[in-house]
Image (cartoon, rainbow, N blue to C red; front, side, top):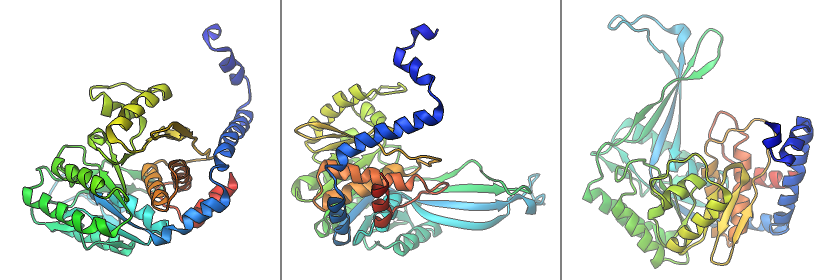
Length: 379
């Protein structure tokens, strides 16, 4: 069997793990050195210092992440049912989905973060808006609707006698019917009022089912039109299932989302770098704007009208938590573009931001400007 393996792989497998890690660091360091010449420390400082001067709008599906801490040692048998109770002893809430992007933007010191979304007239909606306000967002353009529920992820965290935290099945609260024409009109009106006030627009189109979220087909069409009307502003979309439907603006799919955007029936398990390059050029011809394809720990492929650039991932030693990393990339990348950074500079800074947030285990982390600079200096 060994004879069927490539010779270099056989040789690598004979090297002790700690040596392989050191070699990987050296290899990634050489790649990063190539790009650090494009993003020097003074240039990085210059771009980051401008974050406090920009205004960004985030529009899309804002969820409330609810963490309910359950102490099973206090559980008793219910008198009404044959089940034991789940005593909730603590509750934590934070903005999720599009709200995760706003958390990152505010942590990076962006001057003003506007939000356009829809919440229900319910307690979860009030909690979500309160947390957006506490985080520094301007929520004047959020829409309350009696016909909608506030999308919420309820995450029960159980603790027992050994004080080990275990997350059980999540409870999802989502809208089951499409937005009304009137609600679409409200979203479009708020977009037209807010966009002239900002330097960049981030679209968080995260609802898995068509037309059940804020970004319906009609709203998406209007956003694409506005991107043409305001070419001086950065328009940037992130969508798990509909990224191929955007035109006239920047998109940031991962390699699998990009593949499905070009081949909707694809159900494979992996997409090679060569495939990504071919797919990226197809998407670039559709959007007419730069394209960023994330490729996991390998970094980002940047497509523009002139060339394809590979921005390598940043090696992190130790445990990492990738939850929210894509939103961290989006925040750093768009903020950098709004400050005059090139596509390569923006992708590199987006990677830097994500390399900080993934080290914050067990939570959807954020990164400050100081943390981003420290990460750069540690490379």
